Length: 491
Image (cartoon, rainbow, N blue to C red):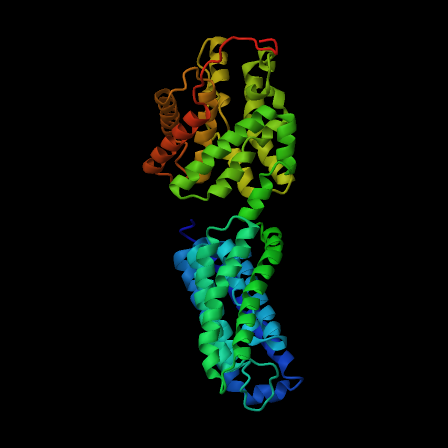
């Protein structure tokens, strides 16, 4: 989490926010001018006070949004693409809701679309605030600029006052529920289930608020309100599922859906790894399992951690036969000097980062590929070089080039990667031996200052150690020795 903005980032964020606010206000103007049938001058004269009120409200709410992110999540302000993404969601929601309200019904507008989108791409608190801001902006827009009870009758297809109040409550209550529900969704089917659940508060709010406003209450009107409320939720989910891939591509978002696609056997690099380096692939699968469990234990993004673990050793595709897990009886390093072996081994980190960037995969994966060994020495070849020399070797010449892990996920992958490889070589994989080995590996990396750049705590390292021990003793548990007996049909 970013704690401080540079002067350049601060100035850029203010300018981008101001520009996005202007675009949002311009969008509102264009939508209104679309409704007044060419009577733009008349509308401006007759509604000048309303226009000023709406403009001030838009600026105030946008400023409030900026202040919130400045104190609560500076990472958003440091990333101009994220600011543009938030305002693009607001503008799209405005446009869609306007046309559905104009040509279908004010109750049928997909008001929950913005909540679903922000819940997926932002933190929970951020999503709630953006959704609330959208609800307030929509209410102001409908009451001051797009109301069906306009004075001169200039506006066609405006929103009735009671619909404005119902939509405000629907956006606020239904949106907050959507944000909390989306936190647990990992599949497309889960989105459909959320749509069904959201129908309940949407129907309740619209029926309770709008039905009593009718002079004559009829079952036909009640069923119509229910139908439009269901339409609202259905359209919100359909739009959400349709536009998520576009946002994933435009803004390089790593949603649970995208992460699962990247770790499937059909993903290009994973498929190549499985075919050309089966040992590395199997190692990566086990490491991904360990990392996912550890990330969940310390409150990190487990889906992101699992996906990054799948790609941490992808650089070994350049020469899979040079790595122990892909070798059979012959070791190519027996014919090489320790210095050349070290170059081959440590280069897999940079080769992995280059390959990840070549295939336009997330930058975070490339960072993890570079960082998962930090600046640790490659002990096997360092010892081999010591035996072949008179001593006095510089250990840094036999170490990875770094950088050190810059995120907790990279630190978890560093620990899980070395632990899995080390435990695999143990003859006695009892829980006590595994615990001792993993503890020593973590202490060794602490002594080498490998975790200085990722803000990981000792408590989190303890949780990671316990989780890895539990997982590895389960994966490599002892088995009953099979009896030496040949069986055939004659037996």
